[in-house]
Every structure is written in C-alpha cells, then in structure tokens.
Amino acid sequence: MTESATGPSVGRVVFVAHSGQVSGAEKVMLDLARAALSDGHAVTVACPAGPLADRLPPTVAHLEIDHLGLTGESGAARIAGGARLIARWFRTGRRLRAAAAEPGVAVVVNSLNALPAARIAAGTRGVSWLVHDTVITARQRAVIRLARPGIRRAVAVSDATAQPLRALGVPVVVRHNGVAWPVDALPEVLHTPPVVGMLALLTPWKGHRVLLDAVAELPGVRVEFAGGHFPGDVEHVAALHARAAEPDLDGRVEFLGHRDLCEALSRFDILVSASVEPEAGPLSVLEAMAYGRPVIGTDHGGTTEFLTDGAGVLVPPGDPVAMARAISRVLSDAGLRADVVAGARRRVAQRHDLSVTVPAMLGALIG
Image (cartoon, rainbow, N blue to C red; front, top):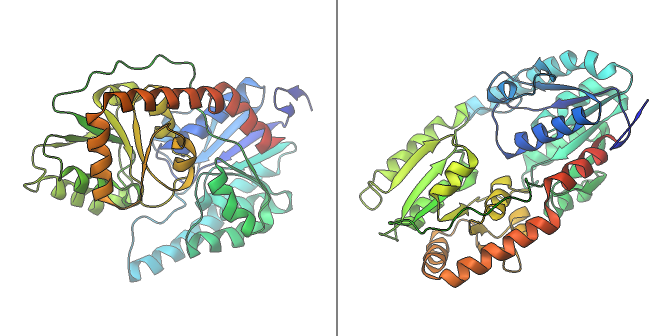
C-alpha cells in the first residue's frame, strides 16, 4: 500500500451507480472519481450505459451493469417489475464480484438502489455507501435492512439524511456536499418578465407541478425547467407539458432540456427547489447559492440546512400558495435578494468548498 491525500491507499476504488443518468448524486460521484485518480488510485465505475458512462474521465474503467431501479411501473406491473429488479440485483452482484474480490479494492455504492447488488458482490468485506437519499418510505427501509450486513460505513451528505440511518443501526458519518469555490457571482439583471427556474430531473418528487401551480397565480412571471428525465417518467413529463399548456400558464413555461449550469442560472432570476420529498443535499441549490442566484426551497431535508439563517427562503413542501407568496416577495424586494445572495455565498465559502468537501468525503468512504 502507498500513502495518498486520503490516507493509506487502496489499489482500486469501484464506484457503483444504479442509473446511467446524470443528476446531483452522479455529479458528486464524478468529483470523487477524479479525486481518487488524483490521489493515485485506479478507478472503475459500474453503471448502466448512458450519459454517466459518456462523462467518465478517459482513465476510468467502465463496467456496464443493468439499471438497478424500478422504471415507473404501477399496479400489477410494479410487482412484476420488482421481481425483475431482484433478478437484476443478483445478476449485477455476480458481475461485480470479480472486481470487488481483487486485493486492496474499496467498493463505494452511490445509491440506495444499488446496495443489494453491491452487498452480493462484496461478501463479508462490506461496502461503503454514499447516501444521497433521505429515508422516508417502507420500501427504502426494506432495501437497507436487506443490505445492512454488508454496509461497512455510510457517509451521509447532510445531518437530516444521517438521522434515519442511525435509527436503523447503520454506522454513519456526515460529510457535506460542495461546489466549485471561489466563483464570481453572475450579474443580477431582473428579466422582463422575471423568470423562476428549476435545475432538476423531471421526476414527480422534485415538485415541478407545485411550481407550475404557484406561478399560475403570478401572471407576470415565467417558468423554465432545465433537466432531462428518466425513461419511466414519460407520463409524468407529458402531464407537466399538459399543465403548462392550460390557459393560466400558456406561453409562460419553457422546457429547456439539459443545459450548462451557468447558462441555465443566467436565465433565471430565482432558483426554486420544490421537492415534495426531503432531499439529502441538493447540488443545484448549492450551485445557485455559489453563483449568486437567490434560492427558494422546501423546508425539509438538506435544503433546510443549506438555506437557514438568511441564506435562502424556505416554504412548506407541497404548498403552491406559500411558494407563490415567496416568489412574489423575492422578486419585489431588491434588498432581500441582495441579503440572501450575500448570506448564501458566505455559507458556501465556509462549509461547501469543493476542494475541502471532496477529499473529506473520499477519505471517509475509503479510509
């Protein structure tokens, strides 16, 4: 073994992701992979084919695996989908076993849905779990209980995410997410008409519908959604388009698809995180805070930790009336916007500098 910035070096780090899409969790994993390479580790990423595999650094090995989540099934189809998922867990676990059995390998699981497969692969050696999911459902708890004997350590990205894991007996430490810092704030030029935006995959729990219903009560405001969607969310995306075409919103909503971070934020006057389920540590919120866009977020999970004490504006989850009031207040008060931006950038500098958070997270995962 050799020494590295994260302590005694393992020979290889194998990251396991359940999806081939790229959202906040996968961005964090890519940062960790780059840091591991910089520290002299060999790196393998096991994930399905897709945008994530396409974004891997050239020196990272890609091990293609099955998609390890449900894909939008409901009713009887969901039962059959669950059976197929269990089969994919076993098939993927066997596929990963050879890589995990090498001497000096650390296996890092990047999502709850990949835990059972990694548990099968790692055997008694165990895996580290980087926790991006705040556990609130019986299904999540069942998956954790299934995989619990194989979890060597969990590393949660917020205190809110760590709490339910401790209740389940999972050994967990907290290492917060970070973003690039220092960065220059984007210029504030209030658009005419003003624009509120979301940077998030178009999946039901992210709360896009809540924002649409809120803006329906604000005739002078536009909405822009930046982000793709999972294959299983096609019906949900169609429903969002249908809502956006109704008379109270017609012509005021734009679906941008994937956009560069700064390009998207420069289009927005406010970033909204409207998740109806608690997020662990939403990266889009931190990114907007760093680049000087005021954030309105739902008051639960890691979002609350990010935006307290004047670093943002918090509203109850699933409440379009409260969201509309908050949007109107932030748009109409230049002093409030300036105070929120200053507080947010100060918080990023103090707690969420990527050059500090990534080594700390990697060290906790493989140390």
